[in-house]
Length: 400
Image 1 (cartoon, rainbow, N blue to C red):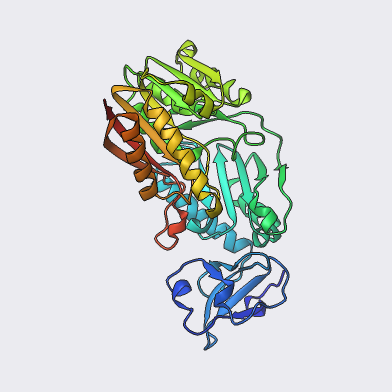
Image 2: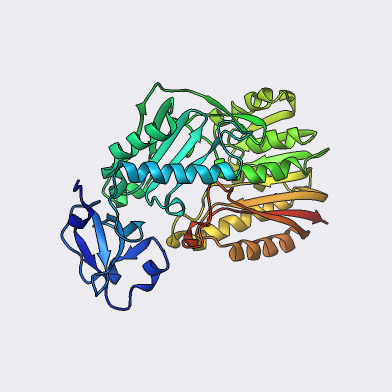
């Protein structure tokens, strides 16, 4: 890797293409460049305008239509010091949101790619265990620098890589899952808004837990008193624990993963809750909902995985969201609460609301919106990068 930024290869923007990077959008598309030089995939580059003014320093991709992911707007040396400073800045922002080792929320996302100025990198923290995801060739080439900076700033007990991401194939990279430092931790215990949970960072979904839903779980806790709850796509039952902690009568957690469901009772027990009220059903959610036709629950929670993963999936994905929401609404009692989520970036809030309108009419219910919840503040929304919004939830009061 070249030590001095002035020696980074220089890419030139076409005239009139300066606006996006000038307004701090971190992506420069190949069509905005004068040419695509023959450089190694992942090379650090600088981008200049027609007058040789340096607009940004970033990583170059030969595989993606996003030719450059900008790390610094202007000229910079991307080295260990740069990463140490970026990590410290990001964690200070988390402290402002009351996340940290000395707070009631000890698991959170430390780095969220573009929103934290580090495109291609995600870092999640579970107490002293850190999990990284690297999605681009540029970040992959900087792996050792990243690990050294994490060790310097956080002194983690262990660092695990969960770069088992399909997008890596598009960058010409193999998927990678391993313990990079420390010992394999197994189940890791942590706190979220005062509740206790466990995650399996090495083998669980995503990086072990759905950290982005912490605000929604807090909202569920505040609405669950005295209610029977159906938790669809429950994973390890975190939303169900929040409901029980809020006074729910009982929770039925439905998921297709036996391993995930096996942790539901443990999650309840960690919080001194009656594990007998934390029921489970190992079922395919689509088939389970399709078989139920009568309103039987005071609260229904619906949080499917990302059904629409790309533009080509939109038509079929919208049909799936419609089916799930219509079927789930049929199971909500009069006066009940319906909480529905989508983590598909390609399914906008407007599309989601339209789907709910259709589904509610066909299910014979009327919805009153009690609130909307997006991804929690450790997955920040950047005014410079609107593409970072992906998670949205509607909390609705249901009348029949």
